[in-house]
Length: 127
Image (cartoon, rainbow, N blue to C red):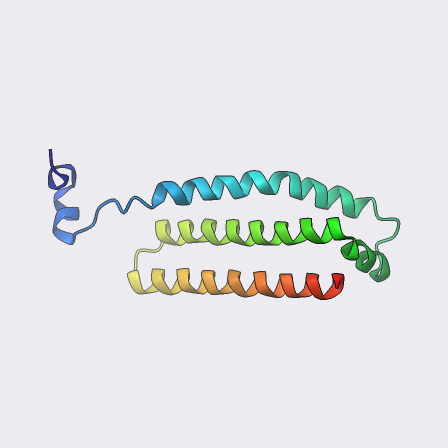
């Protein structure tokens, strides 16, 4: 049985079919979700245990090397997970190809920019 027989008539005409990229995307999204679970608990409990929620306490908290590393990992995993989730939503629910392409591009660039800005701010405080 060849690949043409497994495709619908419409996908054969359009040349569309499986790109075999969906599984990796699915797995990466689940991995980032699993990584984020303990990081979110750490962030919530760590901030809740601060003696005061003022500027100086928060700066001193970020300057702790363990907190800096975990905060950087949280930002990278969180924004990557956000980018993948929004991409799937756009791919599934936007039917116009140009709008879909612009939406995905905007999401990707926004997530890259926000990740870089967050990393810069965290490293500037900690160093």
